[in-house]
Image 1 (cartoon, rainbow, N blue to C red):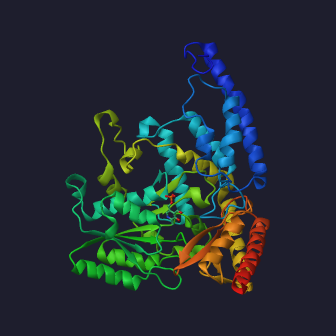
Image 2: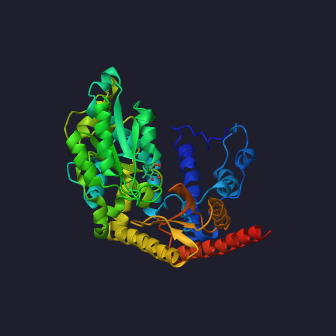
Image 3: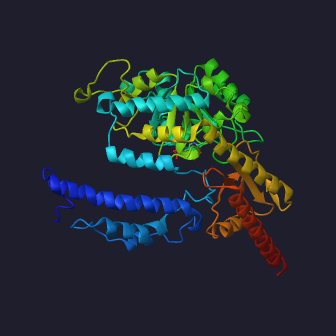
Amino acid sequence: MSDLHMPDPNDEQAWARYVEDFRLSAHSSVEWIASYLANIRTVPVLPTIQPGDLVDALPAHAPEQGESFDAILQDFHDKILPAVTQWNHPGFMAYFGTSASTPGILAELLIAAMNTNGLHWKTSPAVAELEQVALGWLRQWLGQPPEFFGIIYDTASTSTMHALICAREFAQPASRVEGYGGNLVVYTSEQAHSSVEKGAMAVGIGQKNVHKVPTDAEFRMRPDVLRSLIEADLRAGLQPCCIVATIGTTSSTSVDPVAQCAALAEEFNLWLHVDCAYAGPCALLPECAEHFVGIGRAHSVVTNPHKWLMTPMDLSAFYTRKPEVLRQALSLVPEYLRASDDPRAVHLMDYGVPLGHRFRGLKLWFILRYFGREGVMQFLRRHNQLAREFAGWVDADSRFERVAPVPFSVVCFRLRGSDECNKTLLDKVNASGSTFLSHTALNNQYVIRIAIGNIATGRADVELAWKLIQAAAEEVLGEAVSIRQK
Ligand SMILES: Cc1ncc(COP(=O)(O)O)c(C=O)c1O
């Protein structure tokens, strides 16, 4: 075994050779990243491989002897990259657009290099304190009150699961010791993300105890029905514990009436969690303020900088005005982790299921500093404006219909015709290699979504998407006519 791959740590020269090997490959990797980002338009947004192709192309066993960075990077280039769906591509307009911005990429490199772990304050004061600083800045941008405590988890699904843990603790303080006593009910709209149900499954509340509230014609939760559901459940001897409202639902980006949900939460003493995983950053924009009315009355809020705030996967910001409930539910300190009781020493392990805590705060801090408030506002406004323009093109073309309002940067539309026609249209567009769109179902119909949210996406990319959609529509409608004529 070469000492390059497993140096004797006390052999200074061997250690230096090991680090030097990294230095050379790291320089060329950074060069590679820069040209990848510069030329991202030229690679196909979707890979063309079949399931299992990559597994078949790679050895079944790990190597006995360490291999060179050159060999590993060569395989990365030849075998792994062709299997990557390019979320950084300006034509990636499926699901929600995301982007790995340059400050985020740089911070990820530094985070990995330090490999520091913020279990409690002393295990890395920088992790504990920078996370509070960066989340404090973000909280101010989101317009949330200063009493909101923030913590970073991996994803919104984890954040919402923690909100449900809080709701369970809030409603049944004995549950931590005794186990959950049953009967709890969570309310969310029928348009809410599946993570609400999954969270309820994970924390033992159970899928059937997530009561779905119907929505109005614009896919917003109906507070009148919410009230009747709560009242009916109380009469039936159940224990309502939580309302999950969404600002920017996954399918159509509809906005639930948060202020009315807050009023009901206050009246019935329920936990109110607001999921603005995607749309949260728009709270910065005065023109979007109407969508965020009441958010300051929530008990907890989640927003995902890894969705629409240029942050590489993963980073979900969870805020709660009642950190003591979260702590009561989850703090458990074995002797070996006993730490300072200085009130300024935040021990992140007390506020979540995971013990280990990545230095994600560094990434957020880099991004907020690099772009600043104005840069972020410009970024969001660009996308909202492009979505409005796209909606105008759809409205002006009688072959299409728009299916939902456009409060943010997603447009839901469909070709007037069968679900099958719309599926074919989507497949044709996605086969282009330059645009990737996804679908959803609204009003029991197949609906196409265009989601603009990538730092690399400009007007020309959205125009190209529209041209591809129009060309595909011509083909699909032509095919439908010829089938009818046969
Ligand atoms: C509104 C909303 N909430 C939660 C989620 C789940 O996000 P994550 O992948 O971070 O768990 C999504 C995902 O798109 C979402 O749109």
